[in-house]
Image (cartoon, rainbow over all chains, first blue to last red; front, side, top):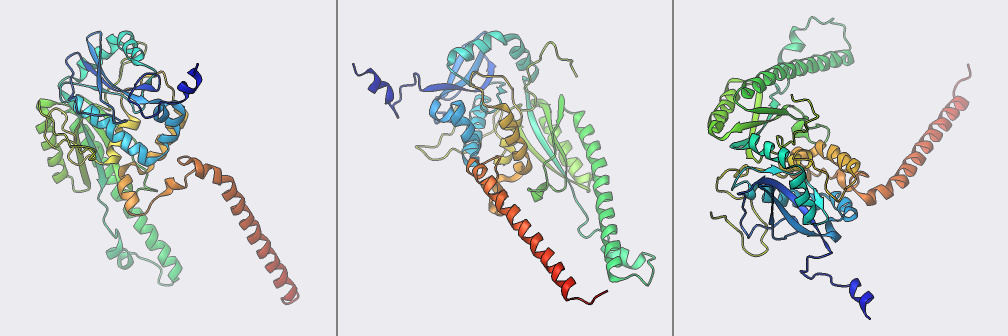
Length: 280
Length: 125
């Protein structure tokens, strides 16, 4: 028999049998649909897995690229990761055109469709309740940056400061430097207080708010003055009001530069309620 | 329902028409990564990626997540050599550390011999 030789080959064929695993994009209600032309993270045709009145959007992807070993390596390749993230987001966005979706964290994988069906059966209640909570809403992202006076204390400090006339150039430099830092710190402090107010005001227009970690400035200079990074869950009928409120705040709070993104699928709000967990 | 679809193998673009989730007009990669890596529903699948590794990756990515594209443009490419993000860099890590240690020892030895010399050549106290 040539069994051994045969199992060793068959690369590049379309047979999706043992060489594939299943990538899960999102879960939504039973009516969820997607264009047959939408392709996923591996360029595969996306499928709808039905069960318990729910729809899971999934795709068969090759183990050689998405198996746990390969995946670990690929996730470290930022080009691969970027393409994968975009494709994942694209499928979720396309599915979201036909109804509310619960986006899965990147790299939620099953050995076969059975795993996805089991998920729908086992977590049906929780998934349905999460879907209910998010129906008719979208996520908006808001980032805020402190607008710093560019050379904070330059005009005044050197003249007004009652410094000893005998200061050496070094001491004078250090004093000026400290004054600059103080001014910078004060400006940031003031902006941070405004940011808190902005978060509160906008939260009143949203169903839910999540405050996210600020980006680190050490490698992204643009994030140096970030003082606000939040997501809001906004009912569709209030989205215009919400955008208007952001625009209004952007105008009336000069110490803050605001950046609004969205509508997003509800990435930051798709949580499965664990009955054991304490509600917030 | 019509969905704009690019032909052939042309890279996909986000749909520009607005529907329920039109996708932000300027959804940059950083914004997308921030969401798909860090948020979204977490359900343990069958295939476990070492979560610790993913979290490390996420933490590292958070550092530049706002502008991966811009980072490249301005020449920030630390991930090429970052041991957390690049496995070949990880292999080089020890060698680099060794080199660095040798360099510092060399420096210390040199400055020590300089002190020695200046003592020897300087005025006697």
